[in-house]
Every structure is written in C-alpha cells, then in structure tokens.
Length: 454
Image (cartoon, rainbow, N blue to C red):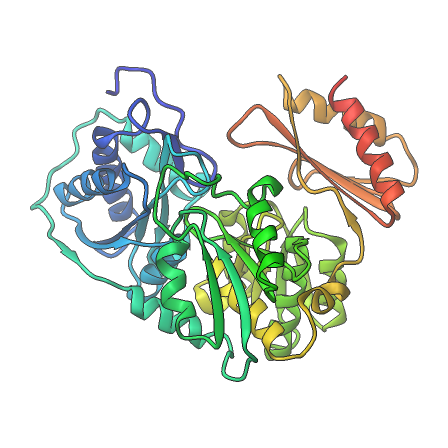
C-alpha cells in the first residue's frame, strides 16, 4: 500500500475519503496501528475509546482500526453506535484518547475518522494528524508488543445524564419540538434525551440510514432544511432542530419556519453562560456576526476571535479557559463538556431559554439578529490563493478598509465586512458577507463575486 499513490484523506481536522478506493479495512488497520504508535509517543493512556456512526462501512472499519491498535499493545473500548459528541463524552469521562468513525455530513460514499487525545483534547493537522499520516505510510518496522484486549461499553445513558445535568430544564413549559435527524446519529441519541423532557416531539428521519434517503445530513445547506421548515409550520411547533450526520452540529428553525443563523444561537448561549460565569472569555470564529462580539461585551465577557475549525477553537478555549465558543457552521463548544462541541447541548440551551419564558423563539432571538448576513457562498476556482490576492489588491487600496489574514482574507468596513477562505478539502473559495442593510449586503456580495468569477 505504501508503494501506491497515497490517498489524500488526511485533512485539516480529520480523515475523510471514499470508501473502498481510499478508506478500506487495510487502511483502517494501518491507521489504528499508527494511532497507537502516536499515542505511545505522546505518553497517552494505553486504552483507546472507539465509536462509530450508522454508515454501512463504519462497523468493519472500526473493527479493523481496533485490530491495528491492539496489535501494537493498545487496549480498546468499543462504545458502538454514537454521535461524535458522545465519543467526546466517553473520552472526557474516562480520560482516554478516542477515535470516531464518521464522515459527518458527507454523502454515503464517504467515511472518515475524528481523533482526540484523553480528555477529548483535539487532534488537528498541526497537533498530530501529520504525524499519524506519516506513521500510516511509513514502511519502517514497527515493534510489535503483546496484543491489547477489547471490551464493549454502552455509554448512552451516562451521556444523556451528563448533558441534561449541564442545562437547567427543570421548569420549562410544555413545548412542541420537531427534530430532523437526517437519518443520522441524532436518531440514536435524541430519543434518549428528549424522553426526559417536558416536550412533545415530532420525529423526522430518525431511522439510522447511512445512505441518507431523504436528504443530505448537512443542515448548513438551506435546501436540506425545507422539510423541517414545512413540518414546524404544519405541526404549529415552537421550535425545529436539525442535526448533521454525526450530530455534533445543530441548526434551529423558529415557529414561523424561518432558519436561524447560528450566530444568533451563539449570542444566546454566550449570554446564558456569562450569566452563570461573569467576566468569562467566549470564543467566536471570524465568520460569526458582529452581533456576537457585541453581545459578549454587553454581558461583561471577553470576546476572543479564532480561526475556523474545531481543533483551533478547542485549543484556544483550553488556553484561555473560555466558558463557551461558537462557529457559523453550527458547532458549539462548552467548557463543562471538556471544551468539546455538542449539537445536543446547544439544542438544550435553546430549549431551556425558550421554555423558561412565554414568548416565541423568533422574539427570543431577535436581539441577537442585528445585521444582514449572506450565508456561505461557494465558488469553484482553479487557484484560490491567486483570487484572494487579487481581492486584497483591490480592497487594500481603500483608506476606510481594514484587512487581516488570520484565516483567508477578512475585509472590514464600518458598514460591512466579508471573508474569503479557501476550502480545506475542495477547489472552492468560501465567501461570507455581513452588512448593516440588505441593500449594502447585496452590493458588496455582487462586487466580490464579480472579482472571484472574472
């Protein structure tokens, strides 16, 4: 395998690729062996936790990975079907490193692996993935140790008890909630969580099916939320929840069927966490609305800006002791959840805030929606960096403009801002724009797209 062309499956934050041609049991075995070698080098515990999603390939890949890890002396705990945040819970609770077999929102033909160190500490490209990749394709002899042992441990009940302990739901009014699991792992975790709440739940696509027969389990794409929007209106529900394939992300739909921008939920949760932990730091990524910074500062917190991506945010949260972090993509991170992201915890915060007062979700979130936002616009380009340089040359000449390159290119004006970033996995340029008025938003978006598509 090492003699053949390397599959480009090691990404910025995890491993992802096509099942069969790129990710198969042989690759999983070598990766398990490599991860065990990496963990030994990092002086991590000698036991590894492994979870898997509902994709058809996940059980066989997880088994091969476990065999690889055990062949190099690592003991393995298999927790079976799990959401990614459930794997993080297991890693945090047991204080063991972990591996989750999932391709998140990717189509059925894909699978992948998310890694963490003990305590759910992140592993990204700079913090371990490059080393693991080198070990996977390294032909140097690896010293074999006495094989490790494997055991099974169901952690669903403990996970449910833990997430419910972190949010006060004791006095919420009866709510009607529509949940779209997208045939993903929320279909496994949501019934166990919501059966303990004062809520009537309308279930959508709870059958676990890695072929995603109804729609892609990617709620950042508005087309994947249409069925949920219709169901919320039809059922006169108070709130709609949409989870991605591995249920570490959550998007909201209000009682009018309107999609809630994740920045509004970031603001709401930041306000709630700062009420419990005054003067704490809150992390936001550079694509979040300006309203997020305003809300954090209005509530006495310290707003800290981060690059996009879970490994960067988790590292920054640990370094600063931040109480909470939010991303535009629907990832929400919690200090009392080992600084890890949890779509379920974010949903519970929204439900607690909604259920503890009499108003609607749209009214509750209105104070956090202060600007007009484009959402992410993707353009296919041959050379993303060349396009970014062209944009910088045009806008950098203007006296009322501030530019920074924390992650891609961010161009700031008093009345608007935009960010352009190259995708980590595809030949795409991602554009996000925000402005004080819809007219200005449309104008800036049109101007930047004209430069991108020249």
